[in-house]
Image (tube, rainbow, N blue to C red):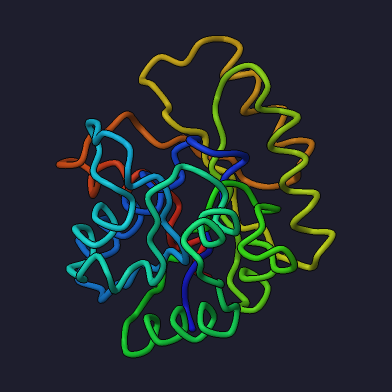
Length: 222
């Protein structure tokens, strides 16, 4: 299965936009692309500028939203707790099977995690475990500003400690004229993490392919 697993340093860091941009750019090349996100939470919240995660990813790939995310919950809480509130149990084997099924018959699978790498999908099964079971290279979405050095390095270290290969880090959003602290953060993370660091340009739901084309997608998928 050819693809990448997109995670984030924490919640709300922009990993869904990153994953959707990658999907849209790859699809724009004429490749068949599928997106997968094991769980979506927070659907009870008032919609903002961006659609819900599974809808955004589905729009980038041509899938139906329910094909992208097998579990969907209203409360904006951790997946394991959202399932508990709903009286359900997230089955790891089902998640792995659904992700692999999504990747069958397509050129690339882009799997997006939930929150950060150590977020529990069940009390005993983390997002990191899903990435390991799928054997996909990891791409880390991180913020460009203050605090990102520690958060990003911790994420990379946690990934490597478990045996995951980190393909790259993407700071998002990356403006046309980065602040000095942002440029410094990018350089020091690249040096200390020993991994290429890219920037995802500012974008919107209608311009994802253009933003994704700025990413080193071929390097990630090698």
